[in-house]
Amino acid sequence: MIRVSVTKQSNYPVSSAPIKKKLADFLAKSGIVSDAEVSVAIVGEAKMMEVGKYLKDKKLHNVLSFTPTEVKGFVYPPDGTLHLGEIVVCYPVAVEESKEENVLIAERVYELIEHGAMHLLGIHHAE
Image (cartoon, rainbow, N blue to C red; front, side, top):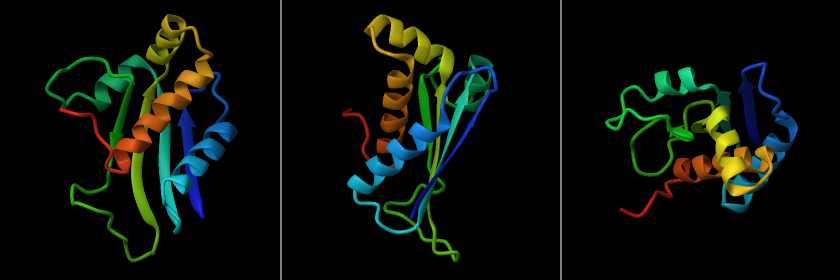
């Protein structure tokens, strides 16, 4: 079973249920078939800057992903659950990007979540 938890600032009109379903489906299609969990946080600009403060570029990011370890492959802790990590989305940036791309805000938020999930699975940008 794939478990997705979603936390968000209360003033952001994001529905957790579709995010949980879409992300669980995406992970299953990506080969995650065992017990796994991932967390998603929808935050504002100040929180995103705080979360990304250790990054070299010091800019406001639309999405960041954090894995529980830096080792190749996945590590199964003693509880048998695959802890994939956390995805953090900056809602105000997603709103601006949705306007620029002429897409629904919910669609852009999910695109960012999926992008973050790909990073958790080891799929990164070409350098």
